Image (cartoon, rainbow, N blue to C red):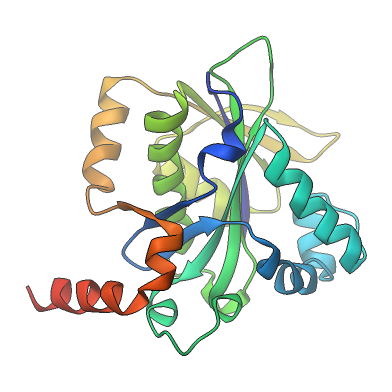
Length: 231
C-alpha cells in the first residue's frame, strides 16, 4: 500500500525541477503537487491506516495547504501526484477526481549528495494490487537517476507491509537491515550499469511532457493514447 525508498541525488532545488513536468506511463501520469490537489489529499490523510503507513499526524485543511506550499518551495523534496491516465484523458473529468496517490523524493543526507529517500503511496484502495505501485516506482527510479543523479536507493518499509517488501525484492532490492524498534525493514539497491540498463528497458515507454501545455490540450493526449493502442 505504501512504500518508501531512499534516493541519492546531487541536484539541489529538486522540487523546482518538476514544477512543470508531466511523466506519462502506461496507466498513470505523474504531475506536480498543486493547490488544486490539496482537498483530495486532505481527505486521504484522514484515514488512520494511511496515517500509520506514512507516520503522519492528521492536519487541518489550512495546514495541508501550507504543507503543499512549503513542499513546492523546499529544496530537498520532489513530489508528484499519481493520476489515473485513462480517467485523465477525458477532458470532462476534473484532475482532482483522477488522483490515485503520491510519490516523493526526499534528500536524506546532505553529506552524501547521491542518497535520497523515495516514498510512494497508493491512497485509493481500488488501485492497490494492480501493479500501479511497481510502475510508479520504476518511473520515479528512472527520473531520479536521469534527472537527479541518484546512485543508490534505500526502501524503508513497515514489517507488516509484506506486499511492498515483496515488490521491492522483485525490483532487485536486497534487505540490508531490520529495525525492531520502528518495526521496519531497510532494503537497498545500488545503481550500476546493469540496473540502469534494465530500468531503461522497463520504462522505455515513459514520456516526459510539459505539464501546463498538456493540461491545456488534453484531447491531444487522448489522440496519442488512442493511436498507440491501435498499433
